[in-house]
Amino acid sequence: WCRVAAKSAVAPMPRGRTRPRAGGRLRLRPQPRTLALVLAVPAVLAGAYFAARETSTFAIRSIDVRGGTPALEAQVAAALKPVLGKNLLAFDGGAVLRRVDALPAVVSAQYDRAFPHTLRVTIVPEQPVAVVRRGRESWLVSARGRAIARIPRSTQPGLPRIWVPTVVSIAAGD
Image 1 (tube, one colour):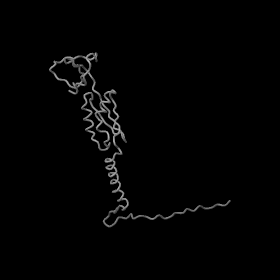
Image 2 (cartoon, helix red, strand yellow):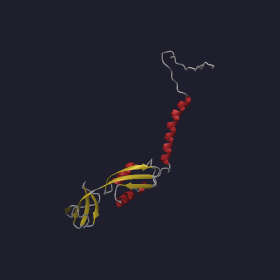
Image 3 (spheres, helix red, strand yellow):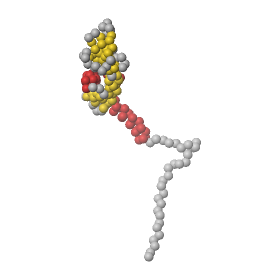
Image 4 (spheres, one colour):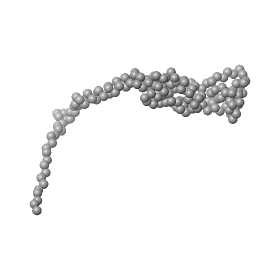
């Protein structure tokens, strides 16, 4: 048998400057390419955002309302029709919530941008707790004391009746 001795080969690696310069500190200097990337990437992203805001790429084409009865959801969708065609990135969300909150049968609402073309609105409907009777009129009233809607006289038999004089004016939302 023959034995072969293994030799190890080590290649010297170039060393960077590890000694401090005069003054005792290392000087770090960014590479020009790195500096250009650090400045260019945020500028390109900001430009892309503002370009997307001004185009019809994210225009609202449908409104998805959830959380109420089908009739109430249709009423909310009808109230939000003016928002159709506006950009999801640029529309006024506060105005949307004010429009929905102004409806007498809605307690509160939240919206979500469902990209690319849908505005999703979730509502919390008013809960009727009583019927206010004024002469021959009947009105559903919520726990907040808000008149929700006028109803036929014989509906909602399980709710308590509150009688008010005919001089009292009642309208939806009051």
